[in-house]
Structures are given as C-alpha cells and as structure tokens.
Image (cartoon, rainbow, N blue to C red; front, side):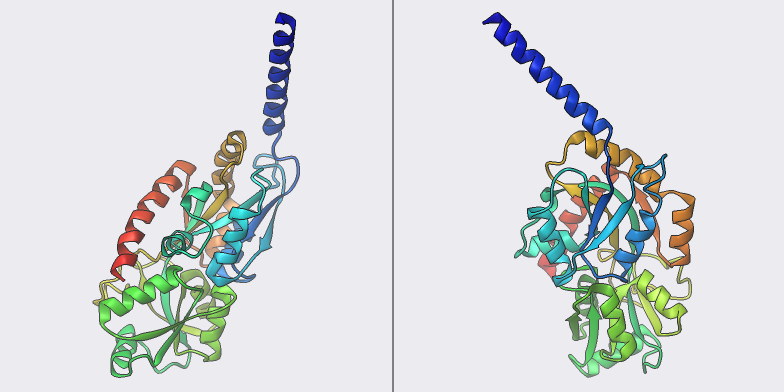
Length: 321
C-alpha cells in the first residue's frame, strides 16, 4: 500500500512539473485576438498596431493575429468568447469598456465582467460628436438648438446599443433636454462614420480616433468631446462640459486585452508581465500617435480596479438614464 501511495504521489508530482514546464514555455504558437467589431474601425485598427511587436523575442516570441467577430454592438463577439473560446491563452479578446459591462447590466447577453480576466489596457478613446464636412452645424450649440426645435429629427449614428457612443448620446439628451434619434449601425464605428460621411445621418457619436482620421481626410467636422478636458489630438475642440452640458467621461472607451475565465494562472501571469511592455514599445507608440489614437497603458491590477469602478458607475448611470 505504501508503495502504491508513493507511486501515486510521484506521478502527481511529475504531472505538475510537466504542466508547469508547459506553461513556462507558453506561448508555443501564434495567439489569436478576437475583435468584436468590424475591420477598419478604431478597435480593429488599434488592436493590429498594439500587437505588432508580439513576435519579438523580448516580448511574447509569437505573433498575434486578429479575428473579427462583429455584430450587435459587440455582443456577437463577446458572447462567442465567453461561451465557445478555449481558456488556454491562445485565444484572447479585445475588450471595450463601458461597452461589455453596460451590455451585461442591461441584460440579454451571456457574459459579465466575471466571465473574463483582464490582462492589460492600451488606450482610452473619448466619444466625440461629429457631422459631415458640409453640415449646417458648426458648433454643438447649433446642433442642440436645432434638435430642441425639431425633436427626433437629428439622427446620430453610433456603433451599437449601450456602447460608449450610445451612453454619450443618452447623456447628451438628458443634459440638454433635446430629443435625438440614435441609430446603431451594423459594422461598428467604421460603419457609423461612413454613415456620417455619406450624409445618411445628420451627425454621429464616434471614437475620437476614428473621427480624427476622418477629419484629417477632410470628411467631417468634430463639434465636441465627451470627456473632462480637451484632448491633445483635438486641442481646438471643446468638451461638452465647456459647451455648458453636464456630460462627464463615462463614455470614454477603454480598450485592452483579456482572456477567458479559467485560463491557467501561469499563462495569465506571463501575459500580464509581457503585454504592457508590448503596448509601450516605441514603434507602437509612434503608429498610435500617427493614427490619432490616445494611449493609456494600465497593468492587470489597474485594469481590475478600473473594471470594478466602472461597473459601479454604470449601474448608477444607466438606472438614471
């Protein structure tokens, strides 16, 4: 009996050492990152930049590739990730806050903040109010005044329901007393911006980074930023608070990488150590700046605290809206 027990103990120990060695070698093959929005939008655009040096030997030593799973304002991709993806570290997902937390609060999805483990945050992208280059509106005040005189006639495109764009639209309505017609578009921020440029809507609420590139191309005017201070990329554009409207930074889009709950802790630890370094790489910073994409790097512990704080804020905010 003693020999049997000893043999079992040795066997368990060998398995544990084998598993530890396996995780120490992670990653041994390329890693996929699911993006819950379409190609060309801000999340997709930025995810491709911030992962571009993953294959460097001093980073993860394996390349990262992007898999787009768009639909329903991110719901399709995050539902898939929470219920079907493997919890092995070889499939990660980009997260968008407040998007997936707000959606889980409102219900009808199969995920919550408890479904995922954050790894690191790469950016914070404020929502902005945009109009086409030939729009009759040159200031946010002109748009609001028109909306008050014509309830429901100001159509605003956005990336989906209960994403940062939608939250900013709801806050703007509450702050101004005006009635806007928010139109969630299929295809995320890229499709929402195309709707503004094409004149399918009178305006839109979109990511600063998408709007920055569209303005650089001469396609839109940016009327206001939904944040607490002006952004360095748009120093000439006032905040909604500066314009006299009580809209805070609750809609600011935090982006980063996460894994599925149940991923081995050794894998999480490896990613949490290396991914922030990847985000901070000089080549990444240069490309992000050129694309008008604000960076805000946070470690795993900082992201966990941010998620928890945003969940409390969003529960209060959405109840009030």
